[in-house]
Length: 106
View 1 (tube, helix red, strand yellow):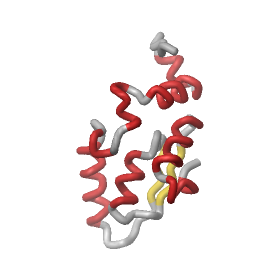
View 2 (cartoon, one colour):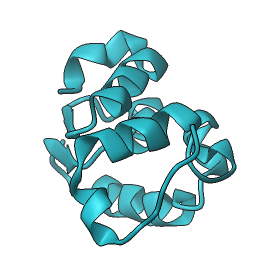
View 3 (cartoon, one colour):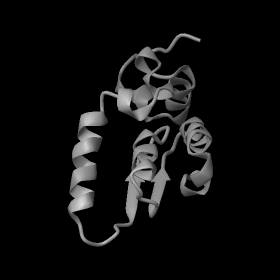
View 4 (cartoon, helix red, strand yellow):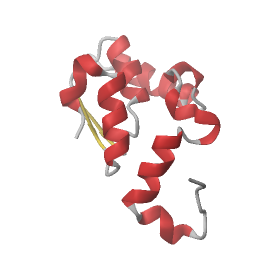
């Protein structure tokens, strides 16, 4: 199925994102390791800020997508995490990639 990018209206629909996540996004980047993501430098900076906090933070990730940032956090020892996304496909992929922490995604 070819994605149709006619206007911003389509982006408001869950089905649009379900299809994007199924196909893996641009260059299948959603199906790759988090370190290969274009967002990795941002996530790395966010992790530095989290590590500078003396308390173990509760992390709420709205629009968590396929859980790549979560995977990074889990690898770095942050487990008080909840990821939420309105794409059912994104949540399924996040649960698959982060199977040990699958209950953290809704």
